[in-house]
Length: 219
Image 1 (cartoon, rainbow, N blue to C red):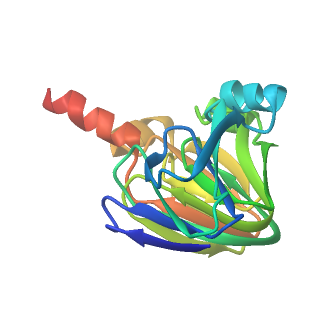
Image 2 (cartoon, rainbow, N blue to C red):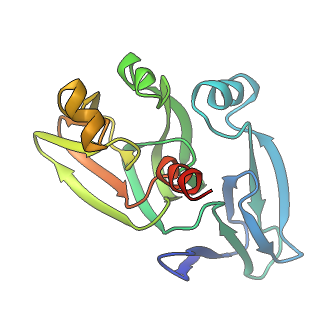
């Protein structure tokens, strides 16, 4: 399989060439265009019950689409996310990654989707009890609103709520007020995420909640 991310960073789009026999699973509604000879099947994300759990507990789509090349020639598939922003990828080699709702875009064969318990503190912060978890061996593609940056957490790190895009399961989230009650309100920071543990995290430079506040103010 060959892949290229074009139109970075504001309108990133994933161009994939599937060789004969290869397949790619993608978020429902992510397909921008595809070769007519590609076969597409829609299925529950991980099965009926896991799909329902991902939908109502993880904030993800109930369905995923599988694109398979059953011909003897390479075929092209183009995928994109609904929000403007960047796309990136990670090659899993037996490790795992957890996504905030809406970050996942697609994965290759060998990668499994499941749910990861995020804790009641995550729910209190409005980020849900569960996160979508990808694990196994293969490529996974994901995106965010705005630019995407990666960093490694070795001890503690504080991230403004809504900017955390993805993280390794070894990272624990502890939402809390940015300061005291008055300071959190007057500073405009509100709730922040105190991350503890060791592992990689991915951050997005913009938040949809910030966009909503901006539009509400302008209107």
